[in-house]
Amino acid sequence: MDLFEAIKGRRSIRRFKPDQVHKSVISEIIEAASWSPSFLDHQNWYFAVLTGKEKERLYTFLKERFEQILQAMEEELSERVKTITSQFLVASGRAPVVIAVFSEISSATSPNAITSVAAAIQNLLLAAHSKGLGACWTSGVIYVSEDVGNFLSILDKELVALITLGYPDENPNPLPRKRDKIEWRGFDD
Ligand SMILES: Cc1cc2nc3c(=O)[nH]c(=O)nc-3n(C[C@H](O)[C@H](O)[C@H](O)COP(=O)(O)O)c2cc1C
Image 1: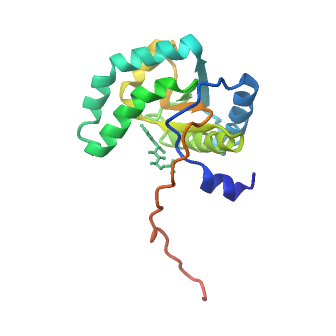
Image 2: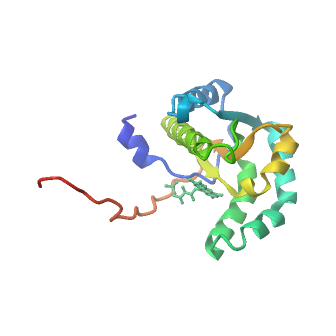
């Protein structure tokens, strides 16, 4: 797949077919994530890949924390985003795979820690799309990141996102991109 085609064609997918994703394919897309740039080449990303009963256990736990997440988001998010996120958290339990993405370096220690992991996540999303998979970057869990870390027994890393992954069961239209986000200086034309 052409790179620009992948960049423009990737969408956040929130409905998945039940088909399982083979471990080797997940391995390939995580390998692609590891080719991201990172601050001082720290390569500080860490991926916990859950499926089957392990994934179900995590989502049961998240549903219990659900109210807490929404309350934590209360001031930060619009009603629309809260509704979308709450619907998503319930529905995403149906994704066959969820990848918990951590930073091995705390954001309190280095603000660049999270941006490096974010670069890796984008590589992962594009690689997933190029393999015919759908994924969604979800962030609500960072409000209960310590709880999730405890639940997964990953105590020495900082949770950055949960990525849901599976074969897409929807083909959403792209949201229009905002323009006027660039200014040109020193060009002749
Ligand atoms: C940092 C970050 C956090 C996000 N968190 C959520 C989330 O919690 N729930 C969700 O449904 N989508 C989430 N998204 C996906 C965005 O809603 C989505 O990227 C945006 O609406 C544009 O749609 P597109 O990805 O299809 O281009 C998140 C994306 C980013 C980059």
